[in-house]
Structures are given as structure tokens and as C-alpha cells.
Length: 142
Image 1: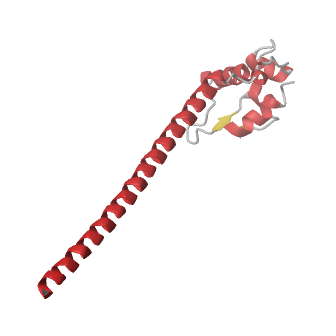
Image 2: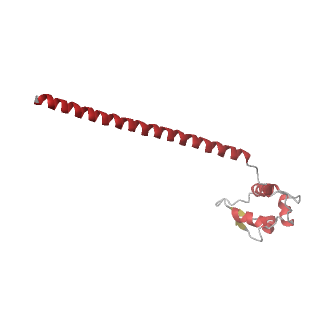
């Protein structure tokens, strides 16, 4: 009789542990389902934000301040011409003049060697850097 009772007890224990394991599996299934739905939400949210960024890039227009024609001083007019031009065109023509007359320094390419006409634009300096050049040219535009 003792063996039957122990067999019943062990069977009951097995059932309890099986129920607990089943409950744990259900909980695990629920959490994985939640994780999957949150992962889906995150990916769709990322897709939406990238779509917004792409449309924002397409709608961007150039700044009209760059296209505004500027009056050019007499010193700068000898290099780029006397007709009013936007800043972008002045810079293009200035670089064309520099390259045509080979005024870019051979050793340090960032430096511009001024000839007689550019010296008036550069405020009497014989050599200026590219970045300083734009600052000096802006003084001749109004």
C-alpha cells in the first residue's frame, strides 16, 4: 500500500509541475508576442520618419540671398566685370581668374598669390588664404 500512495503522490507532483510549466510557457508566449508587436511598431515608426525626411529634402529650395545680384566695387570689377552679379557667380569668376593666371601657390594650395589687380581687392596683401580671400572679397560687394 505504501508504494501505491507514493506513486499517487509522485503522479500528483508531476501534474503540478506540468501545470506550472504550462503556465510558464503561456507567460513566455505572451511576452514574446508583446516583443514582436513592439518590434513591428518600432520598424514602422522608423519607416515613417525616413519617409518624412525624404520629402523634406525634396521640398528644400535654394536660399534667394545667394541669387541676389550685388553691386561690385571698381577694384573687383577689373577681375570679374562691372555688371551686378550674385555672390556665387563672383566667386566662380574670381577662381577662374586665379586659375587662368596660375595665382594659386604651388606648395601650399590654400594660399593665393596676388598680382597687381588682385592686390587692390586683397587690401594690398601679396598673399592670402582661400578663407581670408572670401572675407576680403565680401567688402567689395554691396
